[in-house]
Image 1 (tube, helix red, strand yellow):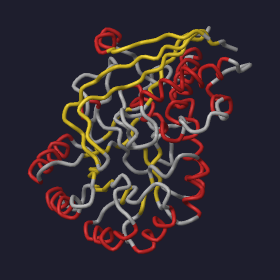
Image 2: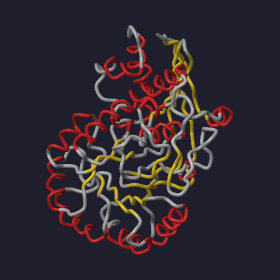
Image 3: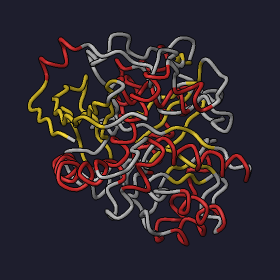
Length: 370
C-alpha cells in the first residue's frame, strides 16, 4: 500500500486559439490548476476544471486551490490507506467542491495506474480503441462568423456539431447552421441554463431543426421545469449542470426531467462517480455522452478513456486539443481522425507531460508535505 509524500498545486496560463463565449461568459485565456500528488510508488497528475469565475458552477480556481490546501489535502493525509477509490469517502465531511475533490482523485488514480503498469481504459473494462468526436461552438457576434467557424469544423471531419445558444441567439443561428451542414450531420444545442419555464413554447420551436438534443436549457435546480419541457418538446432534453452526482442523475431520470445525460467527471466529483452514473444510465437505457470543460491533454486523455465505455452512445465534446489550444501541455495531444479520437493506451490516464512547456506557462506553484 503506497503512502502520500506531497502535493503540488501548480497554476498555469494557457491561451485559447479564439475567445470561447457561452451564455455565462467569455474566456480568452485559461487559468488552470493542476495537481501533482507524490506517493511512495510514484507521482500522478490531475486537473481541476473549475473556471476563473463562479459562473458555470459555484466553484472557481482560486477557491479550489484554497480548499485543497487547507481542507481536502489535510484530511486525505489523515486517512489510514489513502487511495483513489477512498477519496470521496475521506472527503465527504467537506460539503461541495466536487471539482477540487475530482482533481485529487484523478491524481491518485493516475499514480496508482502508472505504478501498476495499467491504463484507465483497461481499468474501466472498456473495449473501444476510438470514440466519436464532437465539437462545441461558442456564441459569435455575427452569423457569418459562426458559419465560417462551423464550416471549418465540418471540414475537419467532426461527427457532431454543438452550438451554444442564449435568448436572442437561438432560432436564427440554428436554422442557418442546419441549412449549411444538411440533415445528415448531428447537431445539438447547449443553453447553459439561460432560459426559464416561460420560454418553453419558444424552445419547442427548435423541434423544426432535427436536433439530437437540447442541453440544460433551464436552471440546474429546475427539474420539474425540465420535466415539463420534456413532455412538450419533440427534441430530447439532456441535463448537464443539474447532474452533480449518482443520486441527482437517478432523480432526474425518475422525474422524467432528462432523456439523455451529459457526464462531466469534474462536475460529479471524479471519474469513479462518473463511472457509477454511466452504469446507472446503461441499466436504465438512458444514453450518455462525455461533456467537456476545455480540458488540457490531462483531462482530455481521461475523458477519452471514460467515453470508451459502452453506454456512451453519442459523440462527446472530446475535440482535438487544437480546437482550443495552439499548444497543449502533453507530448501527444488528442487529434481527430475521420471524426474520431483514439483512446490513449499509455500507463495511468494515458498522457505524458511536456515538462519544458509546462514550466514556461506556470504562473505559480506550491508544494505541501503529507
